[in-house]
Image 1: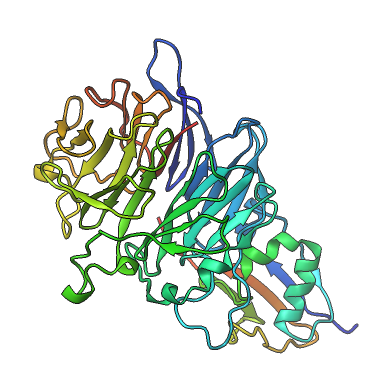
Image 2: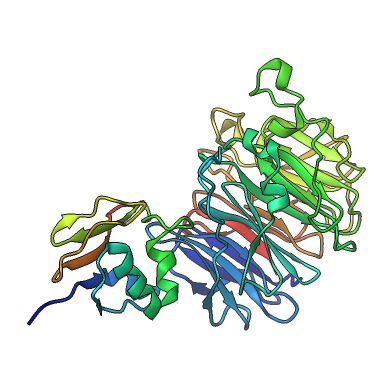
Length: 358
Length: 92
């Protein structure tokens, strides 16, 4: 993964960002100008990448590039099979691609209304993972942020192609260890205050806003949940709650690729008012697994700031020091020292859906 | 000379994919759309959703009247029907 290039998926296009030696981040190229880009899969080693569009009138489309975003062509769109007449739950119609990950030659796409798709040919064709879609528990999932439930986080195991965890708003976290044949609900320990008390501990109703996995210590996950922050150190078998300063509410989380004790969060007032606490944008960072946090403010607006960093709006580079943070207001900030100091890269971008290095 | 139904797509779609002007003897809206999709298979996903229903923000006019069957697309066509596939206006 490159540290000097990043991709910003926005309401009005895909922005390629570059950081040249001794210079600040700058926009290098704009693709799909004026089209909503809901997610991007950064270039793989061979330069292939994907962009998911969400055209207002004409539906979801997927475009592939073989040359790291210089040229694009439309490829297949994940499509749900024919809906049985007696099927309950949301319509079997693709609403949005919310997550894209590649691992061991497979591309995974998480969608609203809750289907996981896989592609073995980099988007030329897609197959619904019906072992998850057909689980009876899926009918208990419900929307969190959208009308229908959706898969926003896909965490492959970096060394085990058979293992994958997906995060669902609202449907907990699900893990397969046999390449998708069987799935296990792995959200034990999370707590949903938005549910009736007797259901608050139910793993299948949890709203993990975002789940990330440490690349070097893949037993460790961090989860920014609707009702707080959770961490797992046992491959999602159990989750432990962590308290952050100011607010434990938020959407985004990033973890250091080599140090599973280090993670970054962007707190917001919980949860009816989704704005920064006291209108000052901060980043909470832990370096000891969540026992303590530092609240980082340098270079971030500290007055009259109403930016929200959504689920995929925060990313960390392979160097563990460079982070980018984009808001739904269209502001983009960068740090090169793990968050000690931030710098505004742009204050005039469209609303930002996703930021990714690579 | 006896006419045949003709289908015309909104120019907005040309930004994304080819929109052939098709004339055919199709008896229903779905049959006429299928004739157009045979010319450009990619066009189908822009007009119809996963279940083959009209997308919510796409409207079809048949001889100046809005089509009625948005899921079955069974609206009958006259021999000289003019069909327009348009987008609803929305967004900002």
